Length: 322
Image (tube, rainbow, N blue to C red):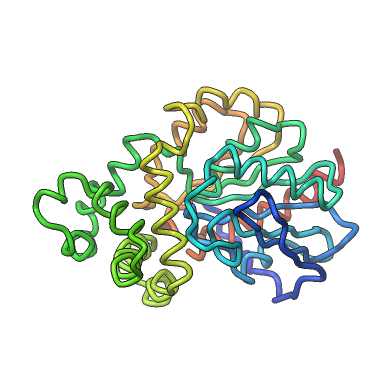
C-alpha cells in the first residue's frame, strides 16, 4: 500500500550519448544514454504502444548511480518512420531491445516499464530472463481481450463524456466494432483522414488517464507525434492481440520468479484496471506489490511518481549488494 513518505523526481539532465540504430530495412530506433556511464544500467520502456519517450523519463533514476538508457520503440517518437506498422510486432520489439543492449555493450540491465511498457517488459523478461537485473512495472497491461474491450467500451462507465467524444466520428454500425473503425481510418494514407482519428483516439486515452482532470495530460496526448504514434500502434497491436498467444504473459510468468521485481498500481486506474495487476501478482507472489490508493493510470500521478522513485532508490541498495 502507499506510504506517507514522498519522493520527487531527480533534476533534469541531458544525455551524454544518443543515436539512431537501424534494426531492419524499414525501421531505425532512437536511443540515448544519460547519468553515470559506469553505473548500473537501466532501460526505460515507454507506454502506448507508440507513445514515445520524453526527457522527463530520465528523472526517475539517480544519475549518479544509474546508466539510464531510454529509447523510442518502432514507429514511435523520434524513431523512423513514425507510425509505421510494417515489421512491427512484440517479438521484433524484443529483438530491438537485445540489439540495443548488445550495441551498447551491456550484459544485464534493470527493466523499467509502465502501461504498455509493463507489457513489453514482461514479454522481454520472459524471453530473456538472464538479461534482467530486475523489473519495475507500473499500470499493468496484459493486453488480454477483456482489457482491450474495457478500453474500447467499459471506460464509458467512468468517463462517459470522453467516450461519447471518442465515438462521435463513428456511425452506429461502426460503434459495434470501434477498433476496426479506427484501425481503418488510422491506416488511411491521407493525413486529412488519419490525423483527426489519431487525435481523437489519443485524447480519449489522455482524458481517462488521471484520477482528477488534467488539461496538461490531455494536451500532451493531443500532440501530433504522440497522437499518431500512439493511436496507430495501439490499434495495430490490439487488432493483432499483440502478436502473442492469449494469456501468454501470465502463462510464462514463472520464468521471472527468480528476478527481483516491484509492481506499482493505481487503485483507480481506469485505463489499465487494477484486476490485471492483481492477476499478475497472484501468479508472481514473489514480486513486491504497491497499490497507490489515490491514483489513476498516469505515471505523473503524485503517489505513483513517488512510489516509482522510491523503488529505483531501493533497487540501488538491492543491486549493489547482489
